[in-house]
Image (cartoon, rainbow, N blue to C red; front, side, top):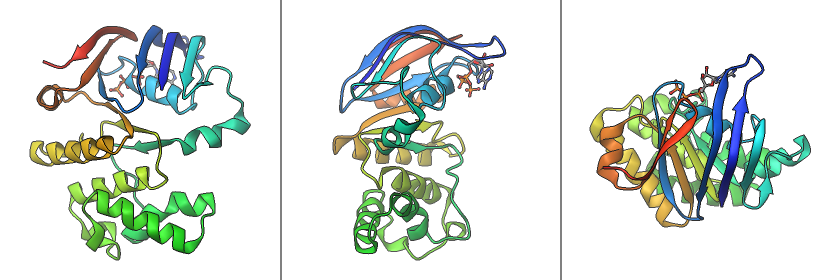
Length: 222
Ligand SMILES: Nc1ncnc2c1ncn2[C@@H]1O[C@H](COP(=O)(O)OP(=O)(O)OP(=O)(O)O)[C@@H](O)[C@H]1O
């Protein structure tokens, strides 16, 4: 589903985000990307979202070449992807339901269709009974689960997460990772950037390790 072929990214200020990175991800895989600050994790995610273009090499996502993608094609690409951020970026003046519904409203789906999909997404993160509450009524872990429901409500084939447990204590972090695993079991490919090596090691999934923009490890975490 994802193919990096000697992908390099050099920013306009001369900083190198990635050096000739090559790896493949199969549909349905669950993998982590780790590395110290500045290793290139965010660059990798931004390339997959076509927020940046590779400067060299070839990057394929579901058969589409992201090094050649036009601006007009980007909205179609993003419909295949869900994104979870560290600070979930919920709207605090909107209910849980409305926060999760937002991507569907932007896509212009009908109200009954939106209601159905939001309730499925909230069930997946075990928050079906919290739809009418506001983010401020929820715990930090529950807020992050709303962020995950919003990321999967449009049923993306690929779910990307950038340090999704960065603000959470170890117990909540493990719980959130369990939610990602549940979503993965239903067929979504999951790629998580994280530097929480203790948590990654407990989960026994594939781990890509970056160092200064280069891939220095690819295997199960130990
Ligand atoms: N927008 C940008 N403009 C210029 N250089 C950038 C930009 N974004 C990242 N870089 C550079 O690219 C390299 C990789 O950074 P990146 O943000 O991808 O690392 P990271 O592993 O996500 O780090 P962190 O864990 O701190 O978020 C760094 O040298 C960084 O300075």
